[in-house]
Length: 502
Image (cartoon, rainbow, N blue to C red):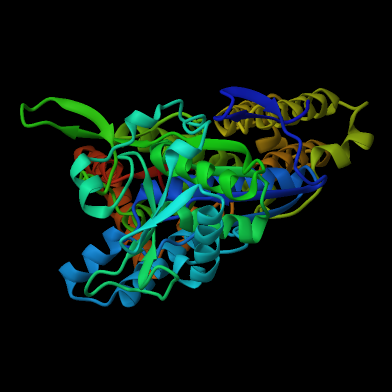
């Protein structure tokens, strides 16, 4: 099946054909670094990291750019409020953003251009737009003349009159029309400024992304991504100013991920789901969530919903994600117990083992697992359906567990059956790797915990065992229940009790 991608510009799934054969250019709008990163900032990077991994799996050479907005009104306002220089504040939150990306396994970004380092490109673009009569200077500002763009609004399907701008601003700033948007802002006291043909000033938000994306990816590139909240006016304005500058198509595919929603209680006491937003003040710290739930689980959680759908951020959804990921962790542990060895990060998968196994008792498992892998790839070819791909992985895990139980591999440990189960499970691990899953020790997540935590858990497990031996079952049950309430599961096995995060 050929890769098909939903294009916001056409409102259709289209056959993916890159601008340059064999090469793909991706631009994803990054954060304005005026506060610590929240989980919403991680959604786009995790999604596009999985997309890049899959494109590379299909043989493409991929260049992925994510910008850092370090010149913008919100950052300047935060700088004044906190009495911290803009550069220092931007550097602090950029570092925190990068740390969270690293923890979540987002390691495929090739460039992180900063707006402050591309002033010359922005000025050149403004100059070209003025020369082509698509922009004009007024009182030290430069504005894009929306009336000069005949197809303005084609991305968002919004009319020019829907641009949010007031008549008072028109009168005071020299704008010709309420819908015209700023490309260059005249200097104000205390703000970062640069010299320009129109006097000292700084760039507007929209033109930063146009200048940086075209510098690194060319005038026309393959994929432009971002959240649905950026569709208008940011992406609409990017599209208008870029194509007015070059007279060429800007991005071939526009891809928008659904917004992160969080359940909150209203003043009347009713629960409702609303958009997670810094301006609303209902954001959840990315670093806190990673520390609390683990990076692999959060990545699994974010990819368990199709990228175009909203992500419902609730305790129930997180609990379901923990349980879902635990299915694979238990399977890896099961193979560890069978082989008495740590589950390998590399090994023979089912396709390489198929030649020797297809005509044996293991043949049905081989055919089934190869079929599941093809189904996984079909899901990814259908607009990068990571949610469907993960569902196929669960089917695959169920098939492997059934094979182990049916053939009594846990007890009889036949070498040829173990080999088949290992190859099937390695196939599962490998396709999970296409999504960036199972980066940590999937078989023993508790191994990453601190020594103190491990010692405390051993103590609690021993106290519970002592209580059961003394027939104090109420105490033993209380220990298990208390641990469960904080997300820790105990499993009693013949060789002893183990623990894991749910």
